[in-house]
Structures are given as C-alpha cells and as structure tokens.
Image (cartoon, rainbow, N blue to C red; front, top):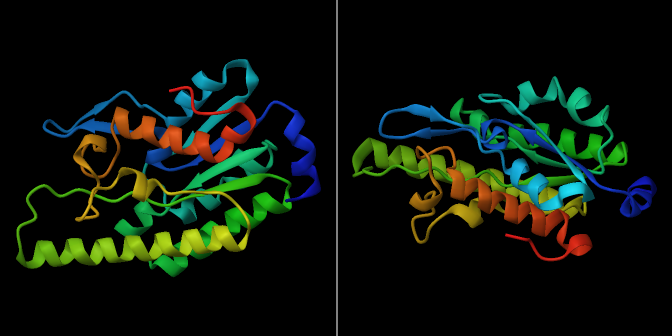
Length: 219
C-alpha cells in the first residue's frame, strides 16, 4: 500500500464510484421498457456513512472502458479520493471487445490510482438474464457470452490479487446456480440491477472498503 494511502486511514474517507450504468444505478421497468429513477449503490453507502465520509458517484450510461479512460483523471485522480471502486466492461462485451483488451484498460485505471496514492477496488461484471432462451442459436449465443464474461472476471480477480487490491465479486453476489445467470430477484431488465441488486452491490462494497474501519454493514 502506498505511504500516502496509509496516512489517509485516520481521515474521513472519500470514495469515488467510477463506471457505467451499473454505477449510475440505472434500472428500467422490463415489461414496458420505461426507465425508473436511478438507484446508485453509492447512495446507500453515503446513507450508511453519514458524516463519517463522502461518496461521489461518477457513472455514465453506455460507456465502454475506452470511453471511461477519457475522464478517469478528471473524475478520480484530480479529486484525490482515498478509494475508488472501478466497474467497467459490460458495454465492451456488448461490442465484442475481447476480455484481454478490457482488462488492459481496467489495469490502467488500477495502476494510475495506485500511483496517485488512491486505493482502487476492482469489481467483477455481473451476469445477464434471458428468461426464455430455449435452444439453438440463442442458447449458443448465451453460453458464449457467459464464457467471455467469466473469462473477464477471472482476469479481474487475478489482477486484483497481483496488485494487492480488494476485489468485489458482483458476479458471484448476484448470480444464481447452476445457470450462472443474473438472478431474477436482482434484475431490472436482464442486464441492469434493480433496487435489491444495487443494495446488494453496496453491501459488497461496504464489506470490502469500510468494514475494517466502521464495522459490519448497517443494512
């Protein structure tokens, strides 16, 4: 851990939640396709922290990790938080960007944060949900998509371990077994989370970032 990170442990933490729509808290009414109010997981964290710290949500819907790179310095490095939670890659996978390319971009975020004395926290990308996938081409597409998602998450977990940084396993925390699909109780539209899903995300982040200092998650 960088020396300036160690010196921050006695100060009120500032956490930047950095990412795409899953960080912004986007959700939609699946039946009608109507967007619902955003429920960023950072909002739950701020509520639980109260005056003990600050949370800044920097999530933009639709962004790939390449898009996120254009604003990482402005939204994270220049702010100088104690921690930043970094979630990206879902939109890249939708554009058929390879897991290795996505990981290269994510690692740039991680190492840039560490070099600036900021503690990065990696996050695995959650699964997806298709209700009536049946068989044939759609089933083959789903299996292939899950394979790439699992490969990216393996790379994220390995890189976090190598860099000695926390890793929040959002995939495991919101998927069902044995299908590895996004569990219906956490899903807004099969891709985004719902209120319960974002609350679960917040709990996972609390346990990774704040539990040692402030104790068990209040919720």
